[in-house]
Each structure stands twice: as C-alpha cells, then as structure tokens.
Length: 191
Ligand SMILES: C[S@@+](CC[C@H](N)C(=O)[O-])C[C@H]1O[C@@H](n2cnc3c(N)ncnc32)[C@H](O)[C@@H]1O
View 1 (tube, rainbow, N blue to C red):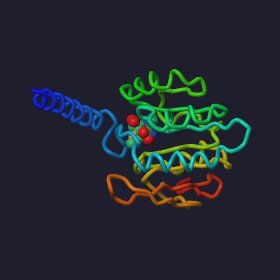
View 2: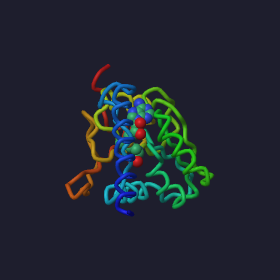
View 3: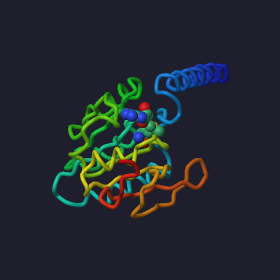
C-alpha cells in the first residue's frame, strides 16, 4: 500500500511538472528562455562559496539572482549574510510565489516579479545567473549593470564574455562549471 501511494504521488508530480514545462515552453517562447530548474547539490554549494568571497566587507552589498526561480540560491545566502541585501527577479508566477513565501522571513531580501531583460539593475554589486543562452544576455548585462559589478553564471557561459575565473564543479555526477566575470572587462557584441 505505501508503494502504491508513493507511485500515485510520483505520477501526479511528474505529470504536473511535464505540464508546467510544456506550458512554459509556449508562454516563454521556447528554450532560449530557460525554464524553472532550481540550483542544487554541489554546484549550488560552489556558487554560494564563490559569492561568499565577494561579501567580506562591512559595507552593504547588493546581490541579485536574475531569474531566481523558487529562491533556492537566495535561501542559502540571505541568512548567512544578514549585513548584505539580496534581490530575486523572476517573471514566472509559479516559482515567483514560492520564492516570495520562502524568503519572507528574511528581512534582507526582496523578490520582484519582472523581466530581467527590462528591469533596472544598476544598483547591483553581484548578479547571479543560471540562464542558458538567452539571446543578447551579454549586451543586456553590460548595459544594465555598473562596470564594477561581478556576474557569476552557473553552468552556462555568457556568449562572447571573457571570464575572470572558471570554477569546476559537478552536476548529476557530470562535470559542470561556474563562470565569474567582471562587467568592465566585457565588450558589446552588437551596438
Ligand atoms: C534555471 S532556473 C534558475 C533558478 C534559480 N536561479 C536557481 O539557481 O535556483 C531559471 C529561472 O529564470 C527565470 N527566467 C528566465 N528568463 C527570465 C527573464 N527574462 N526574466 C525573469 N526571469 C526569467 C525562469 O523562469 C526560471 O525560473
């Protein structure tokens, strides 16, 4: 009997997730706009460790997860660094609602429902992305962020950008990478 309950629950979850993935493909115009897949495991730990290296000063820094999903990364960072301020930008209502509820208890966070390709990002010191290859992402970040800002990209390289550092990690047992960039080192690909 417990196995049957488990199988039914698993089936419902799988059908819900596939339905959600198909719906987001149509709503968000294909896989160029990455769907909601939370950071987890060793890669998530490695990203948090890399962000932590930039949060050593007393001065409050502003960090954002661009496409924050359910707030998985921010929930690992906000309680660890109460002196710094964390933003999550997410356009999909489903993960946005989860992130908002999940992070409500941390006063140093703000979750915003917005398109990261259009919203103001000039205040940020560190921007996190786990965003696949959104067309024009590099030029958008170069224009929207201040030159001193750091961009940490999980798994995916930002097309045309020159990393300051590449960290090796693992995802599902496979090799994966984290790319660390300084905005001022990058050039516009298109004018
Ligand atoms: C692969 S998930 C990463 C989630 C989260 N950063 C994490 O590490 O757990 C990518 C997220 O970015 C969001 N996203 C993609 N394009 C976006 C856009 N233009 N504006 C806001 N959110 C976007 C998706 O809805 C999805 O939740």
